[in-house]
Image 1: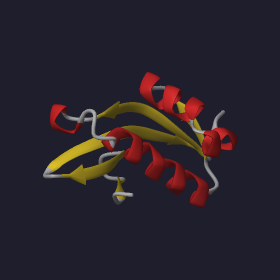
Image 2: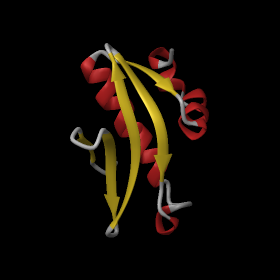
Image 3: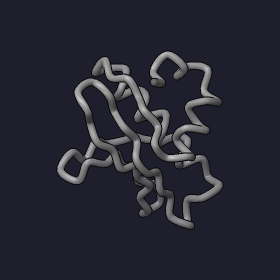
Length: 90
């Protein structure tokens, strides 16, 4: 899996691949990680970059004891399909 970083100064998770960055804007509410928006540039669409980004976000959330609230439609659909992440969703 590609490395996902938490750019906390911009409140977003980032995944860089082939010189392009996919990201997910978020905000924290206590122990709840709200995923507001997931974006993949056209160059990364269809490559699995957004999925890899979501995988990295769930690893981060789990390691910190966060629950995940997917505001973004893509994040909600991805989490719903991911059997390993069901316990994180609120």
